[in-house]
Length: 215
Image (cartoon, rainbow, N blue to C red; front, side, top):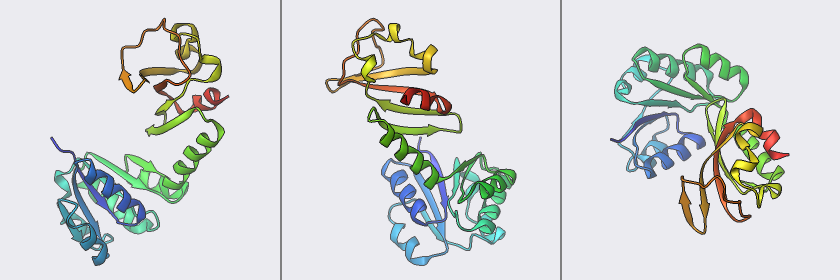
């Protein structure tokens, strides 16, 4: 069953998000005040609506009650973001994500009902910093405020040792979920098989443990 997602606000972040969601088969509704942007994406989504997202009655008329998730992506417009979050929660949207341009804005949006706050520039900077600091990290994704999932090459001092010997869960609170080697991925790793330098580990860990893993 397709997941239904509404993206309210089609700035750069909203456009990138909409393109990715559509490419991956989601049922997407978009709304924005700019008619040209709406026309640009109309053929890529299930529903494209030109709307004044600062007007609560207009927001109620978008048909958000049936969607799984609403993403409020107007990081520069606090008033419209507040209105979209409040109306979405009032009509029963299960999960509302709001983009914020600052920590203060994020706190306000959380107080009016947002289930999750995202800071795209901050998160992009954090990811770039981690990649610059460590050549081991290959991909990184947040799973909320505490957990993250990532793929990485084994650290130099891990090569030649087994997962049982390394005790990564005890040392780093890191759980290896799968491994890719020679183009094949498996979730049934042999804990007594030594790691090789060119394998790729897929793991989940607490975000506050990343600095310890990096060093």
